[in-house]
Length: 70
Image (cartoon, rainbow, N blue to C red; front, side, top):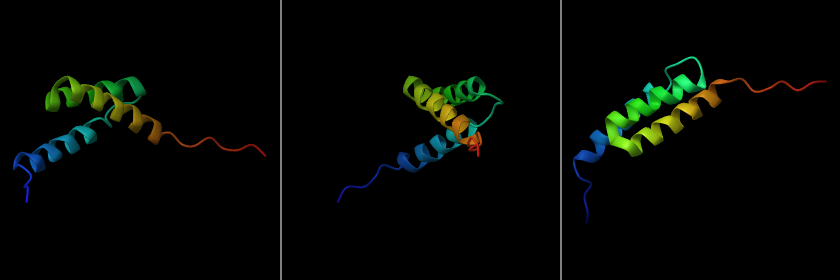
């Protein structure tokens, strides 16, 4: 049976922290930039791309849905 390395839980916790940090900012550019910086600190260039994507998703999710006209 294979075991996960002891670094996997630590890496998961760091990535979760980076995802939470990507929610900082008032507009999409700020949130994407914050996520990219946090991701770069955690996982280098690939983390920067993932963090920027997470910041963009957080921005899209934080906006209310448009109301239907009657």
